[in-house]
Structures are given as C-alpha cells and as structure tokens.
Length: 355
Image (cartoon, rainbow, N blue to C red; front, top):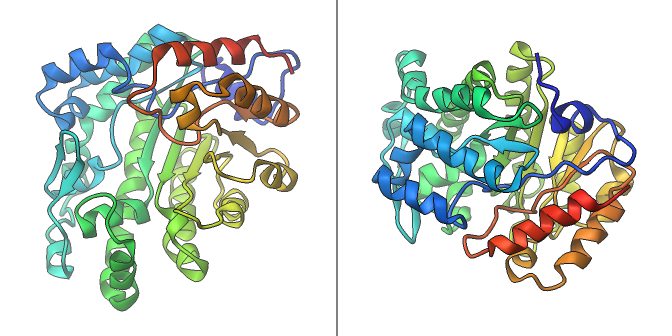
C-alpha cells in the first residue's frame, strides 16, 4: 500500500492538483555538495563501504530531506553494486571515479554468473536494509525511491573498466560476439530485475532506471541494447508489482539528438515517467507526450551550480509543464560544487510557484 505522498499519488498517478506546489527532488541529492555528507563519508572508509552500511547509508539518504524537505528520498547506493555483487572487482578511486576489473571474454563472464540467486541478493541485502530503515524514518508525505542502472550502461563499465572511455570498443564487442552479448544481457536483465523487486519489497514506492550512456547508441543498436532490455526489466518488475511507478532516464551523448530516443523510451518501454536531461527539446517532448505519462526534470545542473539565470530557468520550466504532471528535478545529478544557498533558492522558488 503506497503512502499518502504527493510524488506517488498526485504526480506519478498522472494527476495535476490545481494550485498545489510542484513536487521536487534532485538526482544525487544525497552526496558531495553537503558538508554533513563528508563527515559520514570519512567514517565509512570507502564509497562502497558507505553503500553497504545500512546505518550510515540511511543517515546520508535522510540528510537532504532534513535540510530541504524534498518530496522524495532516493536510497543512497550506486548502479555499480550490480557487478560488485556478481563478483567483479569494483573500486571507487577518490577524485577519479569507479575502476573495475575488466571483463574480456566469456570465460570472465562465466565466473560472474551466480550459482544461486540468494548469494547475489545477500550481497545486496544492506541496500534493502537501508530502504527498510528509511521507510520508518521518512515523513509520511515523502516518497521513497529505489533505483538501478540499465544493462547497457552497466555493461560499458564492466567491459571498459571505467567511465569516459571509447564506447565504440564496447559496442563493437557486443556486435561481434553474439554468444557473449546474449549471456551478459540475460544476466543483467535478470539480476537488475531481481534487485529492483527486492527494493520494492523492502519499501520503495517508486523506482528509477538509469541508462546514462543510452544517448551514444543509434538506430537498431539503441533498440537492441537500451530500449528492449529496459522494456524487459519493466515487464519483469510489473509481473510482481503491477502498480509500481517506474521512472526512466537516459542522457544525451555529446552532440547526438536525444529527442526521438526519449520518445521511444516513453512510448515503448512501459515506464510511467520520463526524466528529461537538460539539453532535450522540452517543447518537442511536451507536444508529443502521451496521455497519463509524467515528465521529470530538467533544470541544468550547471545553472544550479553557478546561479546564473537560475530563477529565469526555474520559472520557464514550471511554466512550460504547468498543464501536465511534472516533477521538478535536474537534467542530471547535482554537481559537487553546488552552493547550498542555490538549492535553498530552487526549493523556495518551486514551492512558491502556483500553476
């Protein structure tokens, strides 16, 4: 039974409540821009230790709620807990991000296939404990969101070892090794689905699927490696929890046009809500948005950090989406150097706006 939360009941339910403040939360809202986060991070020893410590992860997840009273809390975790739980070596290097032991061939991949799903889920049990903790500690009106990465984005890390690598290497590997490709996608579709189902069972009231590198893919590659796997995950989750609200997110890649791919994700994946990245053609999406679908986003993270034209951009987004179900958010995660006063101004401006 869902809580009486604005985000789930009003917005993800497809409703618009006249004169009601727009629901707001921010991707990466629990993290490095908050001084209280750094205190907890020091205690944990490493980023993954923090993700797997229910007490500390709960505290970090609550920090932005306590400070800004956002309408949703997203569990503090990471998309790369999936390969880590499968047994691939994952480290987070301070200042340079994740570093993974590269999967080179099907023999490497076979070592990751769990003989028993319980072993995989037991490794991730601290995430579910964190969600269970949050369920009892959050205000009644605050929606609890779980999440996972989509297969394509996770695969890029598994095959390349870290971020900002040449994604063509990954794509060529998939296109030239059919057996490997089927096996890794089957593995990830299954384990990601189970991870999301367990998060819902633990208390998540909505889930978000992040396919951050989907914008790189074109044509049939986008359908095969991004859209269809996401569709399968949505289907698997809905077999167990048919009414769970599901948010999808994919990011533009360099100069590629993301408009049509975004519409494909809205129309064909089964998601309820599309989280728009900041460079998207907002009016194009709005004019082509199917009924009963929800928009989330899409303030520039850079604008929030600098504060330049901040009020102008906030109001433009609020005005543009005032007649459709809309959750205010960023087009990507909040930058670590974002001043807290800018976030306070954002929340105040959104809350004081009337449709």
